Amino acid sequence: MAQEYSFTQQERNNLFAPSKVYSSFGRDELNDFVMLHVYDTNGNLIVTKVLALNEVSFENDGDFIDINVGQHLRDLGFQDGEYDVVYKFLRRLAGRERTVFVDGNGNIFGGEVQRKVIGNEIKFFKGGDGEKNTAQAEEVFIKEYKYPLVETSPDKTEFILELDNNLKGAEYRNDFVEMGEMIEYTPISKANMGSIEFDSKKPHILEFDIDPTDRGFTQNMVGGQIIIPNMFKITGEEDTTNNDVVPENTGNGTLQGQLEGGAASDFLDIDTEDLIQIMLNDPDPNERELADGALQERANEQR
Image 1 (cartoon, rainbow, N blue to C red):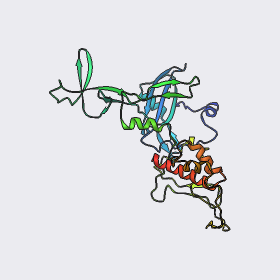
Image 2: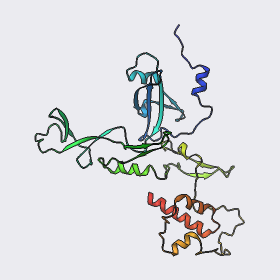
Image 3: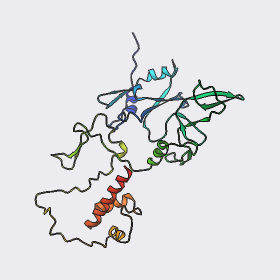
Image 4: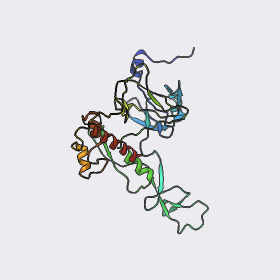
C-alpha cells in the first residue's frame, strides 16, 4: 500500500491563516511574479528562482493558488532529501530581474550584439555575428537592470536606493520616481465594468464592479481614503440653488490669501495631506473648494 502524505494538525495551524486577506495578485500579468527560496533544514539558503505566473495555477477565479512544490524542486535538480521552501508573491514596482546592454553613455541598446575575446577578456560590440568590419564597432557593456542599495535601516524595514548613473532610459528613471509618489489607480472601464456606486440598502458601502483582467485594489490600500470630489448628499429638503447662501470670509482664508498674494494655483508649498484635511474639515466652503481644485490639478499633472 502506497504511503500517504498529509499535513499534521500543527502544520495546518501554522500554514493556514484563520482569516482571508484580500490580494489582487495575478491580475497584473506584466509585473506580478513568484519568488521561490529553497533552504536546507538548518536555514541556509540553497537557491532562489523567479517563477512566472504560468508556473502556478489560479483556481476559483483567482481566490486559490495551487503550487506544485515537488515539481518546482525537481525542476531545480532536487530529487530527494528534506528542504524548507518559501514562496513570496510579489509585484514589480521598478527594476527587473534581467541584464541589459548599454553603450558608453549608459543608453540601453536593444539591437544585435556580437561577442569577441580580446586579450583573454570577453567583450561585446554592436552588430550581429555576420558583421565583417568589427574594428570600428562600438563596444557595449552588460548592466543589471536594478537600483544600487545605498543604506538599510537596522531593523531591515527601510532602505535607500539610488539611480545607477551608468544606466539611462525613460522607463528605468520614471519607475524610480513613481515609487515614492501617490498610487493612482484607474479601473478598466468596458462592458459596464469599472463603475462605482453606493449600495442601495447600505448607503455607507460602495460597490465596485471590476473587470476580470483588472489588477484591482491592493492590501496596502486598506484603511486609506476614497475621495469623491464635488459630491453632495441630497435629501429633498436642501436648497440646491444656494441663492440664500452668503459666502463666509472669502479672501481671508489660508488658500484664498495665497492666491491673492500671487501664489501658484496648485499651492506647491502645501502638501497633499494638508490639502485633503482642508477639503474635509475647513469650515470655509471657499477654502474647501480651493483645496479640492488643487488636488484635482495635481492628479491631472501626474496623469
